[in-house]
Length: 88
Image (cartoon, rainbow, N blue to C red; front, side, top):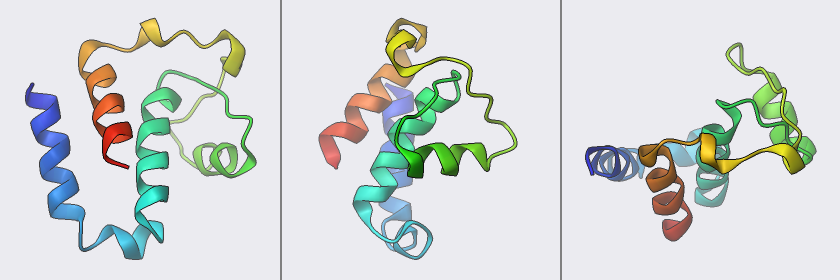
């Protein structure tokens, strides 16, 4: 519940500014959703996502997409993925 509130606040507060950073809303949601997976080591087939996350110091892609199991996500991460997907 608290994680959902935090994401909603971030979406509302960032609403005016993230266009400059991400170019458009769809990119913001796409990166936000996939960052949750990236933080668990998911490798991306899409070259734009792969290049984006490989440019991050914290990213260590070790799990092929077909081997990635969403059960590694905690309840807050799953809720945030759903919230973001529902709002894009």
